[in-house]
Every structure is written in C-alpha cells, then in structure tokens.
Length: 274
Ligand SMILES: N[C@@H](CCC(=O)N[C@@H](CS)C(=O)NCC(=O)O)C(=O)O
Image (cartoon, rainbow, N blue to C red; front, side, top):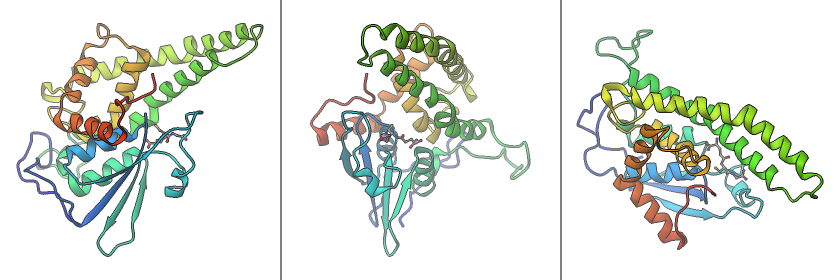
C-alpha cells in the first residue's frame, strides 16, 4: 500500500502535508448515497488528494438506501469504502469515524493532532488539548449530536404524516411534545456547546481542535451542515459555528468534492434533504 508523504510539522499536529498523496497501488471506491454522511468521506478523499472511484446510490422514496448497498456491506448504509491494495483481499470499511481513522492513518497523518506533550509520551494526563478534543469529537458526532437530528426528522415526519383530519391534533400533539421536551432543549445544549468549543479552540484556532483542520472537523461537518440547513440555527445565536462552516465551504478540497459529485450526478448538490 502506498503511503502519504508528510514532512512539515504543524503546531499541534504530527506532520503536515507536503504535496500530493499518491495511492497508485491502492484502488479506493466510495459508495456514496445522496444526501448522506458519505459527504464526509468525499471531502476527506479530496483533502488527501487521493484517486478514488465513486459508486452513486439514490435513496428510495421512503428515504432508505437502495437494497444494492447491502451487497456491499450487510448494514446497507453509506458511507462504505472499498480498499483494494496489491496482493491483498479487498477491505470493506463502514462507519464514518472508522473510515476517517483508516484513511488518515494510511494517507493523512497530518489530520490527526499530536497526542502527547513533548517529553511526556504515554504519560497519563499528558495528552494535548488538540488530541483530547480530536478523540472526543470523533465519538461525539455520531454518538451524541446526530441523535437529535434524527429525532428532529422523525418529528417532522409525524407532523407531515397523511392521517385523517380528526387524528391530526393527536399526531401534532405528540410531535410538539417530543420537540419541546427533547429536541429543542438538546439542540440548544449541544449546538451551544459546539459554539463554545469553537470560541475556545486551542491557540485561537478556527477549527474544533485548534489552528489546523483535523479528521474531527470532517466527522463533525455533517451534523453542523445538517443543523444549519434543517434546524435553521441562526447566525446571530451561533456566529462561530456559521463562520466555521463558511470557512470549510471555501476550502479548495471541499469545493472539489461538491464539483465532483455535481459532475457525476448532473444535479446540484444538497448535503441533506431540506
Ligand atoms: N453511524 C453511521 C451511520 C450510517 C448511516 O446511517 N447512513 C445513512 C445515510 S446518512 C444511511 O445509509 N441511510 C439509509 C438507510 O438507513 O437505509 C456512519 O456514521 O457511517
């Protein structure tokens, strides 16, 4: 398997990018579902300047993935990445966080912060703030924040359900209760927390773990963008979060990812169903 070439040291990071990563001996295929978390991996592959193939899947009317995705991985979800290196069995990787970790380990170590403070390798409590944040956000995105976005969607579906008019007050009542007792308070808590984390980013950085982009930003982009578009969070309340998302949208790799998908699908890109 070919590896990335990294030389320069970024503050708080193991190594920095030096020119192009190459993966000429490794074939990478991203199984990409529209309006899905696969957006993260598409962006990551562009940040890493890897060559990759895209297999495009369209959601069914009920918004589930098409059954063919189960032929790739038994869960039938996206993202899934297939890695075929020379003389090895193909790997099928599922779960965004695990995919990000695998790809950064092999092709983009600069996207993982340096773990220990100098001279304190492997000492308990000597981890850098950048790395502690990195590990936290790599779990937090799927483990905590996404739950509220999914429940928000369920509530919206209950509100829009085609029920007889005399049942509607009941379904709306249920939707309102879940929204006011569960979704709204948690959205305020979690996005308020993310806003604060951006405000206190190490060394005055603009990213979640400091001055440099990390895999954690790539993991977190999906809940951040989905919340911005779907929940209409509001820039006045979350100025740091909007500035963060704007800055990411302006990255060359991010724009390349959007263009690649627009070229392949022939449709304007939407990260989530609005
Ligand atoms: N925790 C997984 C979630 C994967 C997942 O649920 N993906 C959604 C798209 S965002 C999906 O494939 N949905 C279609 C379906 O459930 O049939 C990850 O981060 O990769």
